[in-house]
Image 1 (tube, rainbow, N blue to C red):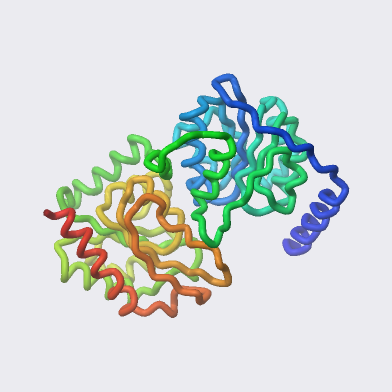
Image 2 (tube, one colour; image 1 turned 135 degrees about the vertical axis):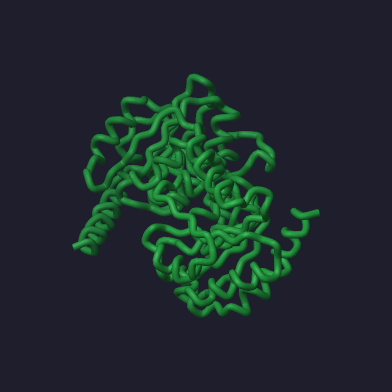
Length: 357
């Protein structure tokens, strides 16, 4: 049923684009404190996080009123960063597309920006039936819906953050690279909870190494035995305290890795998990949204990446020092322990000694 729905939506979108008259090209407006801007950024947590550098530049340099149309799965990222004036949450299960279109029209936006690289039925409908004076998006398959088209930077070369910054360039925003990073600020309660955890376990003034084992799919789980060997190597070679970070669904795996000897940290709230990442000195993780939280705090990171059937550049931590192991196989099972530890050791040693001298 799901496959039929996808095919139907694709057919309807193609038909709509075929019949739709192309919007006349126009110059994007000069934005100021009275301007209303709507940004569309649906989908996942990582998609939301990597859009925050552009949103911060837009707010800082233009001081405009920003509304983000987001998803039920990523809205809390925008609520947490303090950069937006309003959120409109799209819930696919409630089929509230018409309601979202009306909400956008009520704002009477001077500018609507589609931050998506790809083309979808939902986002295309939001753009097509919006009353925005100017509609801006990448020059892609549905480009006739836009009247301000932005050349799409090559995803084989440019990080997703830099691709989003193409909109800042098109709007004439003059910024420095030192202004660009992921924005995420855990609330005070989350920070206090993590501080209590650290204090309770006597971890203050210790070099804290977090190993996150959860990444949303089993394809990015590296294996109980290999994580166990890695923890033994780090604990026996360096004066560091290792903390296993895990999602609830992976708690059994974490316990098998820990064997009751290594601390496990798990919390259902993303905000608390993010606060823990921000308290670390070093993070080891598969490719997941936590990578971008590490970037927000500039935490050095070693990543395990699956780059399967794609030429796109990996979504590395934008601002953190990092090293990675990349496999072009569909999962991490082919990445052996020796490959990881040989690449990790010199990088970890440098970060560790810089922190301890």
